Image (cartoon, rainbow, N blue to C red; front, side, top):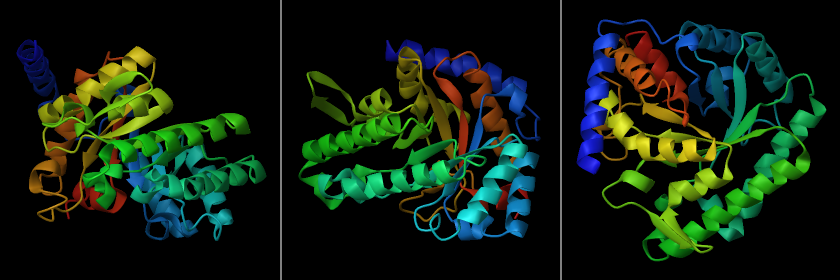
Amino acid sequence: MNRVKNKAVLLLLAICLTLASGVSSPVHAEEQKTKAIWAWDFYEAASNSNKITVLLKFLKEQDINLLFIGTSKTLPDQPATYEELILRAHEEGIRVFALVGRAEWALEGRHREALAELEQVLSFNETHPASVFDGIQYDIEPHTLAEYKTKRGSVNYQYIQVLKKIAHEIKASGDPLEFNAAIPCWYASGEKPVIVETGGQRKPLSYFVLDIVDTASLMAYRDTAERQIRASLAEADYAAKLGKKVYVGAETSAPNGSTIPNEITYYNKGSVYMNKQIKAINAYYARHEGFGGVAIHQYPAFKKLMQGR
């Protein structure tokens, strides 16, 4: 069955790549649902009016309509700057999500810290009704914890619980904040899928995440459209069953030989090549109900790539 499905993916992708052949311009918003970007470093990306101008100009040039902006330590200190960023972004048709995350938040003893980040964003929205965050993304990666090697089942359970707590708090607040989670692509489709058994259910960890959140950003970091599609299809299919969406992530950071090997990043592949792959992904998923768009990691590296540096 998997071989048949893989052949179907390859055939459809070949058609998509043919259609995308020779395209060097960015994928336009009307040709896809969402094009998002991560910008973890608020100070680097948007800490004053000039930086906001440069950031928004670049996002518009690249047809990016969703910004994940770091807020963890900066939102309390610079609320006026965030207010300006959100107001100006909304004027350009760009949604803005708060971006937070630490692996340790998966552990029960650190859940309070994760919830404090949410309270910070909810408080901002309440006091800045004309410039609210549209959503919040949590990037909590429990597999990176030392405890994961010996207590995987327990850590996975604790991780699921913190996501449930976050979802509960958002719902209780009445704020229409979209809850998004960043998740690795190999939880469901890797060589060793992360299978979790809890609450009478046994399935990949990413499926439990999708049960809880509104949307997910799948870190399908590969350097070809074919491999990104293969890495994201299981979650996209599951999301479709739930009536939810996943954003297929692409990496542009410099390879470092360990956490970012060359084969998972578009860093040195060139803008023409990357845009062709992104267009092929959008074409492949064009009618897939679980596909919400693409997400690019991250702002400084992607900007250099698009500017040929």
